[in-house]
Amino acid sequence: MADKKIAAKNFFPPVPGWDWNKGVQKKQWKKFKFGMGKLWDQYQDMQKVARKAWKAQWETFFAQLMDMQQTVADALPDEKAAVPGMPPVPVSPKEFIEKAKEFQEKANAHAVEQADVVFEIQIQTQQQVKDTVSDVVENVEANLDAIQPVAEEAEEKAEVKAEEKPAQKPAQKKPAQKKPAQKKPAQKKPAQKPAGK
Image 1 (tube, rainbow, N blue to C red):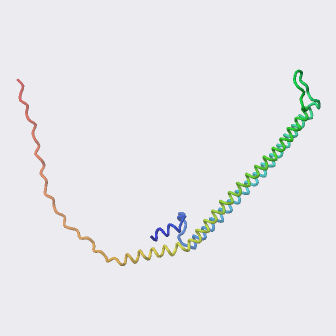
Image 2 (tube, rainbow, N blue to C red):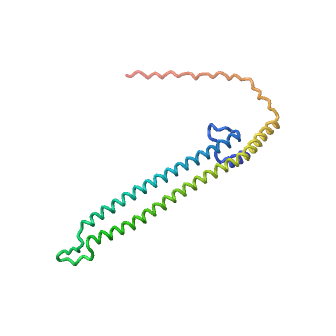
Image 3 (cartoon, one colour):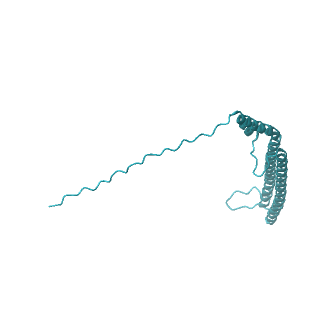
């Protein structure tokens, strides 16, 4: 029963090389929590810097793309082109490029906004996992005080049971009895075949 209580309270088994001393364990868990928190913060900072660099690169690329399209639009004629045998075109090529650029800019603003939202959701999810790990470590630290008395109580019960049992005399060995020698069965000689006529 005491073993079940110990197992229930000590969710994480001790890491090999860690000391069983309660004070040392608390220090080691605090060091683990600090190290994991620092690592997580560095990882999130790295993600934020990478995101900022990607966004700056995308904005530069998109601006250059818009400039290229404007250069093409500037080279097109202002008049509406009429193809023989076809109905007249409602807009000129220059107007068409301008409308396409407006649509691309709106789509780009929406896509960048959605990418920012997805990035923020990822950061929030990582922060929740970090908080959960910190809570688990704090829970383990709090339970270290409860684990030690339960373990000591189990050891005391085991010692009391060992003292209550009367010392048993070692079992006496019976003298070994000799087994009667077994006779080997006699080997039969092969029967002789009668001589052929």
